[in-house]
Image (cartoon, rainbow, N blue to C red; front, side):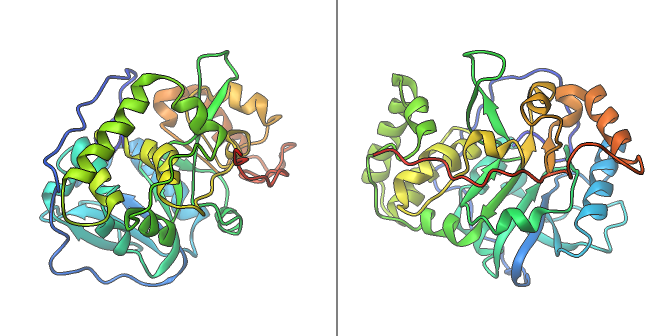
Length: 321
């Protein structure tokens, strides 16, 4: 999580994601939400929006007009913009009291139980742009999780893994199955896991997390692991969740480019042969000029590139034997 309506920065800094073990109780009273195939969930921790955030909301309204939309806000926050077309879900204020708290909430079971009536949620932070209206087709592919792929350091076009959580599609029953799991299978099921855990740094995170989980009581093994996880929540869903659920599935990083761009958008655009993704994250921070040009292109009556978010490939991230 790097945006809850608090502006943006051109710098990437190491964040302290530590919070108290066990974190916080679920909302009381429990919010009422609907049911269906898909909902859009917008986390927001500020009352008023910047111009860029208004643009983000406008793109969402334009391309997800028929999809239920929820604002997840802390208790006590009074919103100062028109949100009549959104349902508001209030959570304990401590759960959104900064990036570390939000990060932990996103790997806490009660957050996903809030939307248990839906098959998928599109998590949409307000530094995102929804560029196309084909999000439903991505749900049809049955992946557990998909976000903008991350680039590695083996070259400018090195795609290493899926993916960023700021604009991400999450299958609710799989999120809950992971966090409710007492199963741990120590196999690297995906190529991106083998790369991620090729050094001691992340193996140490895994080993120490398991030791703490086995020593602490209360809840499932996976929820105890998550309760002391101090890495970004999207890293948990991308690299650690497959250990806890045999059926957990991910797209390849190359296919995830059709879903979203984050960093290196010009290179990503070349890799997709000039085809825009369904959406993007951190657009203003990564390359504002590039995205303003693409938004202008979208307003033209005819475009030579394919529809945003549509790609031909339909492959899963290959499992390793």
